[in-house]
Length: 236
Figure 1 (cartoon, one colour):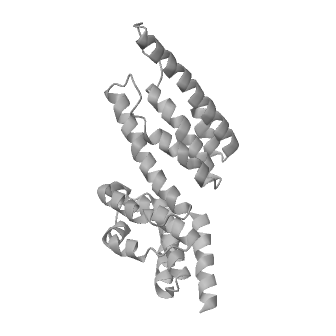
Figure 2 (spheres, rainbow, N blue to C red):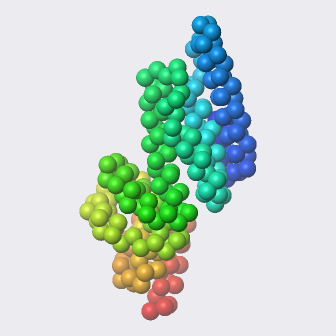
Figure 3 (tube, one colour):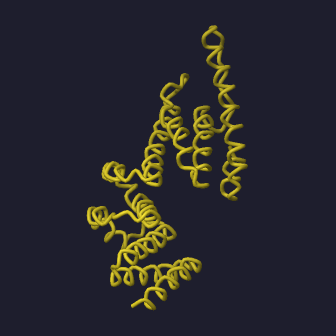
């Protein structure tokens, strides 16, 4: 599992796929052995592992799906999302294991909504918004995902921004928002406005992006925001 995560962080996605497949295969072998012992009435010895077995089983599918999605293979990633979303069949689950199953279901829902949007299923946007309403802690990262996809595919998400306008306004003065994520959000929001011809709003968000980038010493984002602003001003 560590090799899988390390490969993904290094953007070695083919290696990520390979290690994810091996992780899933190993977890399946151990799981099948435990089930076989249970059926035969044998004692099942507790595993001496850092995590519950279901974590390794689910992570294999999760990381495989992420690796495929990151490479633009969205359709191919969907079956893996469904696999780690539905781990309720897993036997020999204690309370901790059941909690882990719920985590995978939660992550799967998020990833499925964004993946569906990436492959052109714009109707899933309303379902995504409903999910964010029921999980307020996901609103800000969810909006970032929605804006990023909207900018790539030309989706009109004005109604989503209006719907969460209060949350967006509150985030400006919040100390609890991750600075890097906040900068990326402002950058995507500025780009969205500029692409839709809302120059004033686009410039305002770009300036916010510049201010946040300078404050957080995010110089790469500062450069990107500055370039977007100059490009826009040249067109006016």
